[in-house]
Length: 155
Image (cartoon, rainbow, N blue to C red; front, side, top):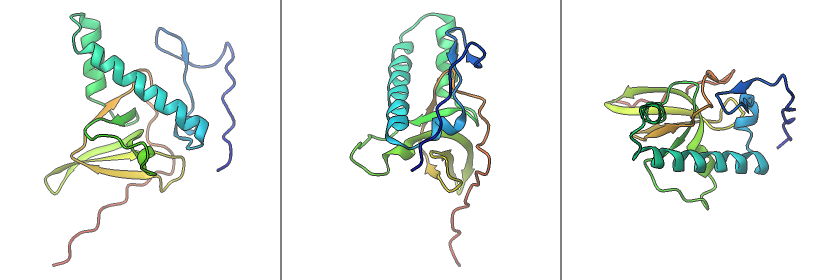
């Protein structure tokens, strides 16, 4: 895989939220090289810990943030939380990425995630639950992404 050029952080870099974290381009968030994916894994881990801590908060602001985490929108950076993770599985990188769409198909909630930079790097999940990462939203559907419709049973 080719190395994606890293965003140069300067005083003009678009910032996210009150913390002023740099907003990374979607290409960098979806890069599957070892270094970028390790960064994405750490970000997901921190987000999980924040969501669990927020569950016991009485603060209205934190409850609002938790509601946003639990109800992701298209264009959010998300991670799957409804199954156990096997980090030895070669496809474990498919459990996080940019949320493309969630809809009901054949009576099941179906979620499409763009997990990598290539057009075909889209994973279809059924009845899975996803959480969003605060401060990493509004990316929109990555350019060139297509949702591949599931095969329809023949009659």
